[in-house]
Length: 179
Image 1 (spheres, rainbow, N blue to C red):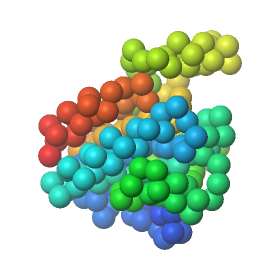
Image 2: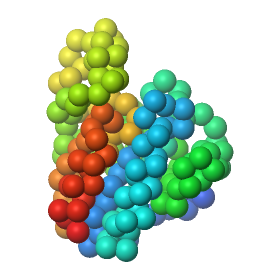
Image 3: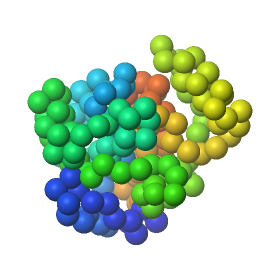
Image 4: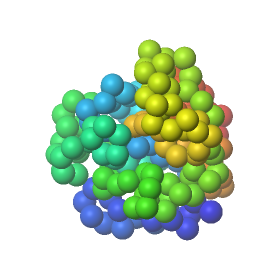
């Protein structure tokens, strides 16, 4: 269950997800130098609009995709607050795939695998890049890129996975249905 996992905050403190029991949780792996980085703005809007109704956001910076999250946790936090006025909690930079991935991500991927990219200006580029690297890329549950989102309901069940190409309005509709 999601509440069995812990993450480390950007300030280095351990956070048990059991503290979020009864809340709707959005988990997103982020990067500061990505074409999807402007999604910080609508994600912050979600936090501002729904936090008081029970939404929590776990922003987990990740440098595994094109090295697009360089810098320290402090530098990433400063970038996000300066450029996007983010107020939601930011976790310590971490891997979401591979032998050093956060156990939380092992669990999330086991609950909701990759279901394809939505229509988006980056779709063809991403699909071509992945197909060249691994012909079976679309059959694996791994996180494909920055700004992949998981939505967890108030009972701790992973109910949805949204790839970075998904419209944040679809993420919002999912969250609203759970609040």
